[in-house]
Amino acid sequence: MKLINKDTDYAVRALMELSSGGDSYLSVKSISDKQNIPYQFLRRVIAPLIKKGIVKSKEGSEGGLKLALNPAKIKVIDLIKIYHKEFKMSECMFRGKPCCNREGCALRREVIRIERCVTAEFEKMTIKTLLQK
Amino acid sequence: MKLINKDTDYAVRALMELSSGGDSYLSVKSISDKQNIPYQFLRRVIAPLIKKGIVKSKEGSEGGLKLALNPAKIKVIDLIKIYHKEFKMSECMFRGKPCCNREGCALRREVIRIERCVTAEFEKMTIKTLLQK
DNA sequence: TTAACTGATACTAAAATAGTATCAGTTAAG
DNA sequence: CTTAACTGATACTATTTTAGTATCAGTTAA
Image (cartoon, rainbow over all chains, first blue to last red; front, side, top):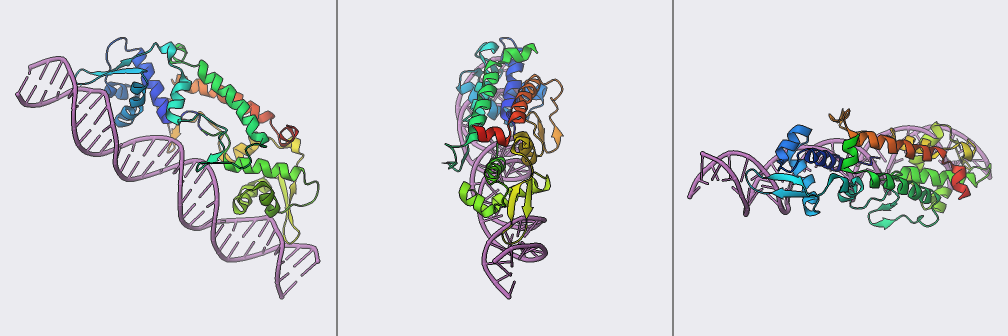
């Protein structure tokens, strides 16, 4: 029943940390220390952000991370989608099989409506808007 | 990432079935057949509904279930709460320990706001409103 | 008496979630 | 030219949640 899992939570916090880091490279270690995030976990969380071009990395000593995008361009909905694969609260699926009741399901139609509203909220939410609060 | 789990889904469908059953007792077996719900699972799902006074049961042969409340009085939010214990999408907890970042967490504040909106929607939704769609 | 029911609960399996460990390769500085 | 401080990649474990099954007991109408 959680909209946000640890991956998304840690990603958001790391990105907020990077936002305040200016143009210099910050090491994953320093972020994990400051934000109290398990180091190895954070490294795994950050990997897809680098692949997606949200974060830039520099290898080697004195290396680290910095933002590749403006904080205003980094939407929370995109982060959620990265760590959930499919952002679908109404996906009545289990072991690949869609629920047999799908088509006529009144509850499902309502959940889809609510989901659209939640998605819209996370669409508006960016690292920048979070920093402003 | 699901707002509704199988327990809630099955409970809603069983309650809709009971709504159209008038004042007679319907057996769990007949509901599970009609709605394609695993029988033993459905029995376990229904147990708390009986305890909470949402459904009335009659034991023995020719026994079964019927609604104890008007469909308009049965809120989906209450069902969700029954099967999730705590309806809290923003509960940054793991193994009983609250996340150390709780107080200053901008993301959490926003998720709480969104949660209030989702809760309000499920508060308005009843078995009756679902039957009308 | 028995078949059709509910009450209660213990069990298993799979998936999601959270966290750890370890291999390798890169780079700046001494 | 070595070494310490980094990232890249991935394999592993543990815990919790979710979904489903099995079984023993008691109740009641025919």
